[in-house]
Length: 450
Image 1 (cartoon, rainbow, N blue to C red):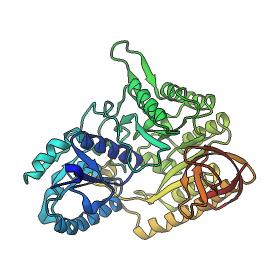
Image 2 (image 1 turned 120 degrees about the horizontal axis):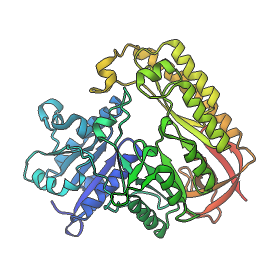
Image 3 (image 1 turned 120 degrees about the vertical axis):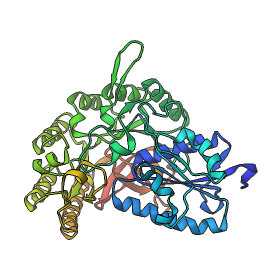
Image 4 (image 1 turned 90 degrees about the vertical axis):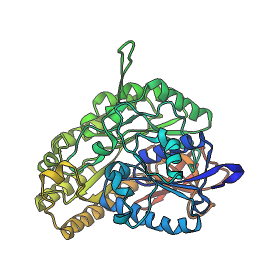
């Protein structure tokens, strides 16, 4: 294989959550440190990595279809290496290497804790050997690797501060594909934040499968840093740096964290707080460790301590045993909270999870789909109502670039994580612009710079 200036070229394609996009930047760093260059053109790639998601069957089917497409590309580039990374690699392991079952050839299967080994695994793959490493680690955080920020907007960046999850929600495969929780040394996080500030970035999002369970104990002094402590330290780095975080678990969002947000204007007024269901009975079966009442109490605390804070959520319809009454409770909770936006899905049974072992997937697919449609339609009306409340207000918008539709329009996000579009003028990416909101759809605010 030959590449630009003698370097082999790697093409990265990422599926799923923000953590996967952050991990792909780690992979890019590991590969460039070993003589590769990252390309955005798959047709010139010597190596193609798909960084995958296993949260739903649909996500895995998309990857399998993509892998079949890549077999045709390999006919034009016979020496090309194809690798599957991430959660799907961790879940399916050697099954991905069995050509007879999948009707395709995959050269590398690498789990999310083995990215440091990619260069040595590449050597095996180039020699025609099966290259696989899906061992989970108790301490891997990639804290010492500086991610390669490729394909971004140069304004916003992700920083992984912890990995893994130990909540074991009944429907979720993440604890099995990501392993136990482990947090990064806060000094390494603050160092990465400063590097981004020095490079001109204006927004960072702190990431973790369960980000607000971050907890670091200094091995020498035994002093403990909580997520609230870390958030305050990052916010103090630069007042012009916006700070976000994802994803939160409702059981791990204490008043102290909310007061920390209130004390720092550059911590965005937006919290993603997945509820999954409005029924306490279903939440118990999901092993979510809170009730409907507990969730609403946390929402009330957010409203009291952070007035006007946007709240978004995740909702699953058709979980095992969900009745029409359970579904109506989800709809009523949505109305009571008035979510600003939501990610909504119908339940997809994942092999190996508690739900797959313990419960029967007994809600017919048609019923799941109908309930999902009702949830989506309600959320669209709630999102529209939320955006209408912003009409005539002035929002501080961090410009991310041109609108997708026209270079006559700029787009950016408000502190509430709402997309705002306004005339370009002489504004540039990275500018903070005061925008008066003059119109909206359920997904976008429209306005004029003042």
